[in-house]
Amino acid sequence: MANKRTEGFFNTAYVFDRSGEVAAEYDKTHLFTPSGEHESFQCGWHTCRFTLDGKSCGLIICYDIRFPELVRTMTLEGVDLLFAVAQWPEKRTMHLETLARARAIENQMFLALCNSVGTAGETRCGGHSAVIDPWGEYLAKAGDREEIITGEADFSVIEGIRSSINVFRDRRPELYALDRPV
Image (cartoon, rainbow, N blue to C red; front, side, top):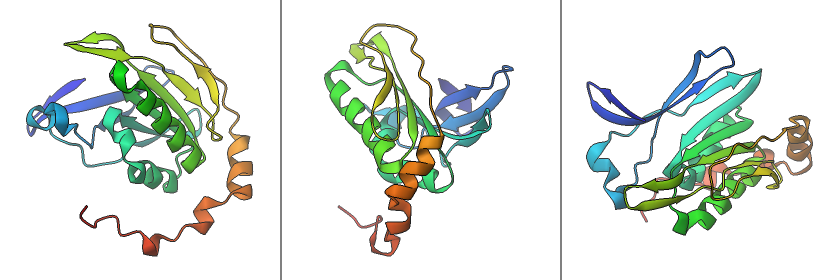
């Protein structure tokens, strides 16, 4: 949703809890420069973490999913369920599916992906929304048409995965100079 503020326009997503109250608000942090998004929108400056039904959740928008360090940061801050809302084109649906599964696997978290269907301007969106478990398996998966899907997440799985394959213990952040130019 385009959200106008004093500083300009932001691509903002809102999360509502079961009572209809706003549980979270997030401004997209990575703007898709190949489409000129940076010419119309301001980028957000914060990660988005919130609690729903007692579970620690996070939210990203579209192109943000291509930045693994963003999702890893949120995971290190305690997120166990990531919501990703997107408007990815049909021709790159495979990229979106692969990236969503990778983010779930590498962060040992659940991921709920909602991607647009239909046409936006001249772009046909690919759909394929999904609920993915920490092993990268689909708990629910949509096709390329509008539909509602549901999946049941057993959060006890996370503890087992994180204790048996403890990537968080074995990390070596002192080696990761993420600010080096490419």
